[in-house]
Image (cartoon, rainbow, N blue to C red; front, side):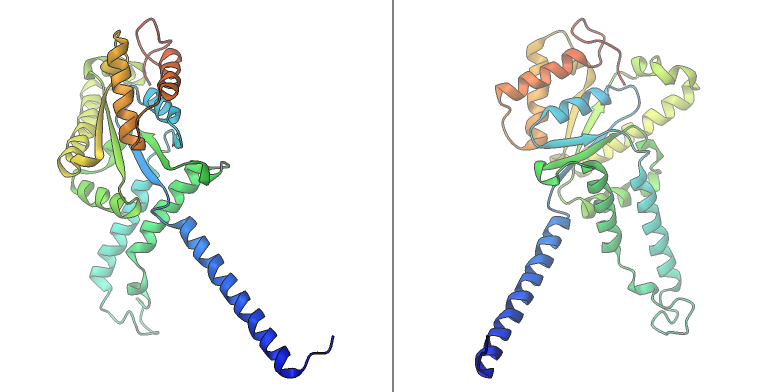
Length: 275
């Protein structure tokens, strides 16, 4: 169809604007999906044989929550890479890093924010897996090797977690240490060494209570698996409200009871001992 040149130019300009707006909208949508604030995050901080697998199951009984199992605390390696980089920049960052012929060219261009985004991306994609990320508001994992965080890197590590996972929350799971030491793989460990590893996790839990009191929640295994159903329900209800920010409905409580009934514990309603 013939169109006068002025008309064609106006139509072409409209098409170009539409394409540009669509491209910008696509970029904005992609950025929103990758935002560190798209989801809320919760991590279970504990030691082996404390009942953490049971807590993991309970968390997944709550609506729009997806919490995975252990992953060898790979986040610690990402944090240590960042710490090494920052120390290296402190040492060499002023030595011609903007000069194309410098051995340290570009060193100061590496941003901490890139590491924070990488930590978030790895956890988010790893937790979601082949599920639809839009189906969940809260993501996280449980881990039992938090003792690997050295005392002198504790504050820095959790400061980085705050940046990578804005508003991150922690479930601090505990169990009587005497029962823990006599349970599962700890039986094959040196007693003093086992106590040392567990005590290190306890120190980290205390650090989180002291520095982030509004973003931690304690769960005691003995209360969660005790014989009193009212106490168990109360523990579950408070845990659910902490993680989701919403009251627990009767249906959700019923799902949590099913987890307890088929989970880990020494009482008649449970099947096996704690993980």
